[in-house]
Image (tube, rainbow, N blue to C red):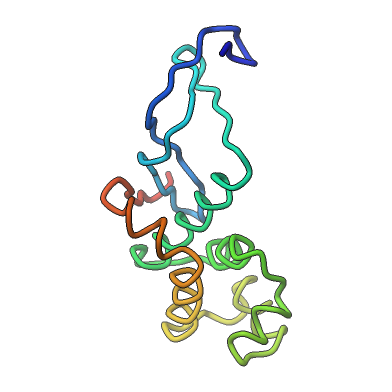
Length: 140
């Protein structure tokens, strides 16, 4: 297959993929895909992209020491939930979720753990298998 961007021959392998989660970058080296060795262009199918986001959110919530509101919003969206839907699952109000995601109300550990629990449930098979190939870095 030729690269869409530069017409170089694509190479199949498990090349690292970076996902921005708030101010953190989660690097996942476990997703097999084709990538251009020249420009770095790659494509993932929709399910692989969804799993990558779920796993990145899961890793960030478990490993990051200082989650920012954007990371909490990313995690909710990775779950495919609206603020109202997440609030119902956690027994909170939509306003509380909104305040956590805007930074108006700092998210305590109980909120982060509950969100991580939802991500673990949705993502347990995938993330458990590849956890040795994923790391989190603080974005510059």
